[in-house]
Structure formats: C-alpha cells, structure tokens
Image (tube, rainbow, N blue to C red):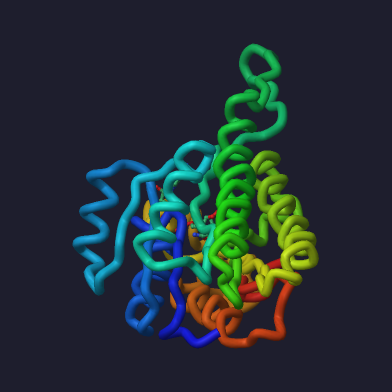
Amino acid sequence: MQLDHVRALVTGGASGLGRHLVTRLAESGATVAFCDLGEDRVQQAAAEIGLGVRGFACDVSSEDDVVATVSAAADALGGLDLLVNNAGIFRDGLLIKPDKATGEVRRMTLSQWQQVIDVDLTGPFLCAREFAAQVVERQVPASLIVNISSVARHGNPGQSNYSAAKAGLVADTRLWAVELARYGTRVAAVAPGFVRTPILDAMRPEVLDGMVQRVPLRRVGEPEHIWQAVEFLIRCDYVTGTCVDVDGGIRL
Ligand SMILES: NC(=O)c1ccc[n+]([C@@H]2O[C@H](COP(=O)([O-])OP(=O)(O)OC[C@H]3O[C@@H](n4cnc5c(N)ncnc54)[C@H](O)[C@@H]3O)[C@@H](O)[C@H]2O)c1
C-alpha cells in the first residue's frame, strides 16, 4: 500500500503511541482519523496534531460507539484502508495476594479482569469487524489491520488480564489474516516492549531503571520504533498473519 493513498483510523489516538502513529501517518501524506475517549479531549488532540486529522469520541469497548465511529470515519474519509487497533489499558494485580498482616487472601477482581478484556480484546474485535465490513461494502481493494499487542502476551506476572488480552489479539491476528485475505485485507500485529509514552514517564526512575536492565539493548523503545514497524507493514504487501516484536530483545 502506498502511504500517501492510505485512509487510516487509529484507535486511542489522543495520546502516547497512538498519537505518534496518527502524526506520522498524516505527515506521510495519509488521510487520518482517530478515536479516543471524551469529545473535548479528542477535539483538543485533533487541534494540537493538526495536519487535517479528524477526531471521533468513541469507547472501543462499546458496540454502538464502534459501529457509529467506523461508519462516520469511513464516510468522512471516503472509505478506510487501514485500521490500527492501538487503544489499550492495564489494571495490574496478582491473581491472589495474601495480606501480610491479616493473612486474608486478596483476589484480582472480576471487574479488574473484565475492564482490560473489554478494551484490549473486545475493542479490537469490534473495530476489526466493522472495518472489515466496510471494506466489503465499499469494495476497498487492498487494506490492512494492525493490532498493537505487547511482549506481555507471553505471560507477564501481575498481568493475567492484560497478557490474556494481548495473546488473544495475536491469535485473532493470525485467523483474521486467513479469513480476510479473500477480501484483500492483510492483518498483522506489532508487539512493543517498553516504549517511552506517558505511562513510562510517570514511573519512578529506579523502577524504570530496573526494567531497562532486563532489556538486552539496555534502553526503552521510542514511539518512532513502533511507527517504523507499522510503516513496514503498510508498505510490504506480502506480509500478513504475523506479529512483529519491537522490544529490544526482552523475553519474559
Ligand atoms: N507504552 C508501552 O510501553 C507499551 C508496551 C506494550 C504495548 N503497549 C500498547 O500500546 C498501546 C498504546 O499504549 P500507550 O503506551 O500509548 O498508552 P496511552 O495510555 O498513552 O494511550 C492509550 C490511549 O488509548 C485510549 N483509550 C483507553 N481506553 C479506551 C477506550 N475504551 N476507547 C478508546 N480509547 C481508549 C486512552 O485514552 C489513551 O489515549 C496499548 O494498546 C498498549 O497496551 C504499550
């Protein structure tokens, strides 16, 4: 796919990685829409990014929101050829944790589990479904879905919910690639390790340093590294059904 012909929808585009991807896509000549939580926040981000990007308020875990947003973005851009499933949250916690003082066994709550599954797995499912439907309905000849997974998909202690969602997303990447190939849609995942976004900036320096020591390249990734992987997937139209690890070599 030629970057300057791409019409893209990026979820979670108001901050962090998503915002960088929106910016780099638009700078490369693509026509770009993004969605995120909160109308005011979305419109502020769209104005700050500039470059003609369109912002839509949408909770990706809401079926009604996603159906309306994919349809509105496709109308606004004259069809969509690229979806980046980037929106994600984490709600970390151990499965169980005995309280040192009382011995009471605390549990990861069902709500902690469900919130992450809803946003990080159900969200991409809904967005991919609506994106693929508009590809067929509008007869878009060549298209691409990029799912942002994580190195945590291999199973990161303290992240039962997040690891399950990000592993499920890579499984769906593979099967959507097979299911959707007949419609000219490629599907791939990018799995970042630690990437410098507001999440990392908020960490205590000693905690961040401890994390970096586990990375063979001894540094965190930059959003630009994730863009380079996404750009490769856009350009190389013989890649589908795979997951590109961009993680400095860390293994969990
Ligand atoms: N930063 C890292 O080190 C890292 C590592 C591995 C994977 N990732 C993944 O990359 C993606 C982006 O992460 P980030 O670090 O930029 O985080 P971030 O919190 O800066 O950005 C995530 C964006 O998603 C939005 N969002 C959250 N819930 C949403 C919902 N229900 N509907 C729509 N938008 C929603 C947030 O408002 C935010 O703007 C996530 O999927 C994350 O799991 C990040």
